[in-house]
Length: 117
Image (cartoon, rainbow, N blue to C red; front, side, top):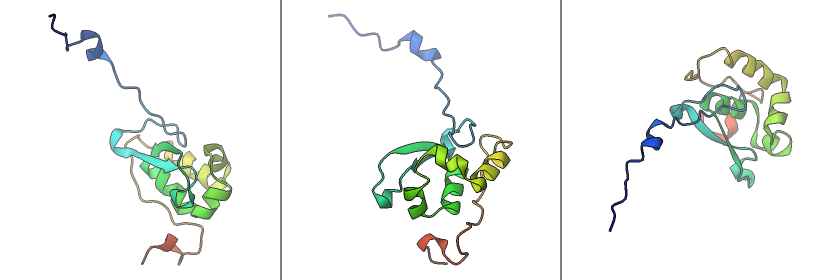
């Protein structure tokens, strides 16, 4: 019986396809990939898109889960918001591995999305 050749030479040179963030259009390093539920999971959402962690954090700093579910459940809708446009214009100039904490939400400063302060 012939032995299988497990060392396929053609597969050695295959480069992984870089993943681009649909928000900022920069390449997402593996350690910066975050899955964003277009409709929040808490609201029954299942479909996700891969985003930079900093972009994902900023979305959740700007919008509540209810806002995301009702109006901002597509990348296109998110990109139409002036606060998101301002953030994207700023973050596009950063290197792909850039990481920063999310900016304060435009919601009431005491609201903290249900987290204890």
